[in-house]
Image (cartoon, rainbow, N blue to C red; front, side, top):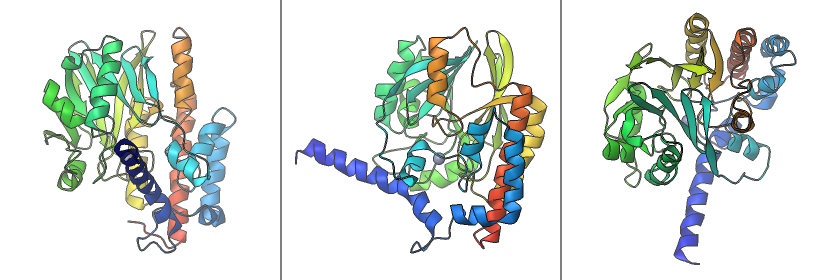
Length: 348
Ligand SMILES: [Zn+2]
């Protein structure tokens, strides 16, 4: 077998092992680790979880039915690749997405499986997430930015939405960008602490620069981001409240760094707290994630925006619909914790 093919096969195997880990943990069985999520059977069997699922279904009505399906399962919103794997479907072929101006001041750039966001301000750019590796940052992210006239030398801050020990999705391109363009690099303190000691020599992380704490803000020129820590996917997964404009009108959206909110009381309490204070106070009208498809059909939504930039923005739900969406999310998160506790699973 030629070396190139062998390397490809090894990489594919490594990817498979990584993506299978949460499923193995979910199944319990021969896996020595405690389960992270209730099984679909445990989720369906819990009468008190069902009360919350029913409440969520009612809130969803017909205009949030797809979101209800994505959210009110035993695992909650998850990466498309994992969901397909669980359903026994073949993996989708990845590709570079046409850079998309999802709001007047925000671009999505990167791959169909995972992207990054650039926020434009009157004093430079903020980049959120950096793809998987140096190569992807150099060969996909930077050329995508240049293609639409965004100068990587103008990146003033890189915000990493979260990091997993030993894995580099979201964080892997930051080392290259930090060395090349000298921006400040920010991540939650908890995730710097967890990822730096576990970094792999072939995928070096960025040098630790700025720590993010719950409730902190970042202002660059005319734009202020508010950071919350949504404990659960990792100890320091960020919920970033982002001011956006669409056709000149101001809105706020929440960029949730991690789709999977592990069902324990600590993560539920923080989630409810962030919804009842930050989301409500800022009237957040939409949710984003670096992995398209976790929360909504993002690739289709972005295509719609590219085809008709003068139209309504499908990523903005409007206040009334968004209000029901957040309540529905909370009901589904609570149902998962109750099912998990009822199954005697790990709740801390
Ligand atoms: Zn993650």
